[in-house]
Length: 334
Image 1 (cartoon, helix red, strand yellow):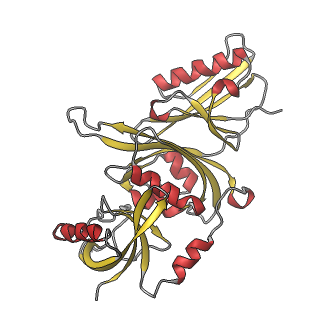
Image 2 (cartoon, rainbow, N blue to C red; image 1 turned 120 degrees about the horizontal axis):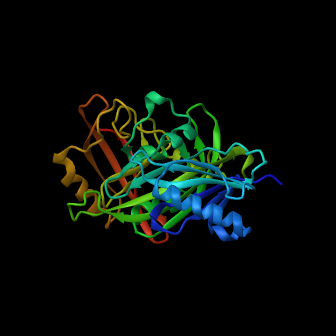
Image 3 (cartoon, rainbow, N blue to C red; image 1 turned 90 degrees about the horizontal axis):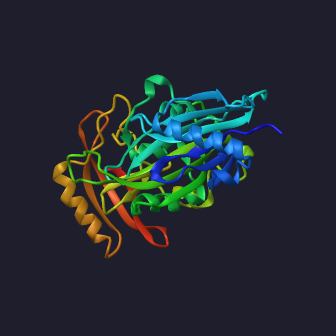
């Protein structure tokens, strides 16, 4: 039986654990439950320890020459190690090609995301369209989360250090291919500036391509019934957005994003922003949700750099049984 690649998570300060074996997702499984051989386990843990100290690839034979050990680090653009692709097998065995995987993080406090070239390779993003950091809402542009969507949004809104989340979602690659991907992450609290007391909550994780979406039963279908119902209520020129109403931040668009608005922070685009003079209006809308649905006009930055007045119809929405957010219908203000 061919030896399979192991995807080992190292993010979040926890003990390294297996989140993928070949194309099979694993729920943060201890290494010793998968690597049964005492000598192979020693080879594996030694390689993992070395790569965690110095994230460079290892490819070597064991001291007795009988086994080959490969440990390939997966780091974010900032250089943080999030996972290691590990292979430990016979020295004479042919090593199979590993499936794509990439590291990423969500800054849940500042609503920024960053990935890695490995992740962009998985997404099929052209080199000229890659950016080291972007607005968090843009991260969902390539993802179909299916029925897990509310749970995923709740994780972002709760922002609790120590939480873990795993899910199989569908990635819509830039070349049109639909791939099933296993996401594993853990929330941690960090101080970006060691000279400051300011703390942020960051969701650090890794994405593992586990095959064509149509071949993976757990991958969400292109459209689920709940989304069809929401879409059917939209009038021409209206767009739906999921929003963290307490932090006044866009989480993701439900369906197509409103054109002409700077929301993603893509290459060559203006930084997404709400007009400073309208922040109090947004806070009032958020407070009004305690009494029911509400509406108002707020200006947002357009792709041309100008402020665009948008009409917002805002309603409370349960992301899960413990977490509330806002469902916002967006249209151009008259």
